[in-house]
Image (cartoon, rainbow, N blue to C red; front, side, top):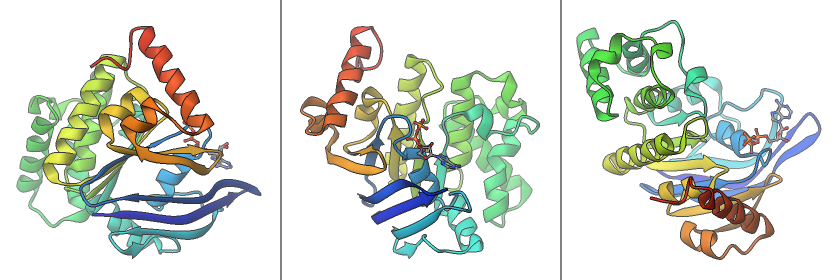
Length: 261
Ligand SMILES: Nc1ncnc2c1ncn2[C@@H]1O[C@H](COP(=O)(O)OP(=O)(O)OP(=O)(O)O)[C@@H](O)[C@H]1O
């Protein structure tokens, strides 16, 4: 499923948050969006999902599989979300409900979007937990009983259980240690490629991006300042912001995390 953002701008409380952003994620493609804190990454991700603040003024276009998201009503967006596209958030502890068992949370999107028997929902949820590398016995656990990495696996299971064709992952590894970061990125890549889905992977960390995305965009101050193959951007960034991010990634790798495989 393709995502086509064209000349998207957002004004919020009098400030321009996104300024003429254009980007494309082709069918079955993994594309990265990198930028420092406050560059507008999360706002773009939320807008693609139709979850931008109510007071945000948008111009431009976001086509998801040819369907216009900008100006679309809540019911159409709710239908798109969960069934055809899904989002994975930075902090799994906040994305998951603290009072519902893991199995129920993975079943919920199926309940909302498909007519299945309770038994079939259960079967699919347990199979999904297995696919994200969790013991299906953990279905009975509550999120606080799991590690951060296990929680993010649950969040990924809940996001992917409906087989969405487009996945927007907003800094899905930022809250995790570096070894767990790599495991989660590799898991996501495996699942996305296995399903032939498209991925927009958002991060502020080049070392993670190189694992996740073949092609990337750099966002700075709400604008796309560079686009190209992730390897090229990493080794020979053309923009000032690209050089800053590449330097930061190199520095982190010198200190023993991030770039090593
Ligand atoms: N509800 C809001 N009202 C007004 N401005 C906001 C709101 N939420 C975010 N902003 C502003 O929008 C800009 C972009 O924020 P956004 O969260 O998209 O950045 P980001 O690149 O995702 O940063 P981070 O990596 O820290 O999450 C920032 O300047 C932020 O202060």
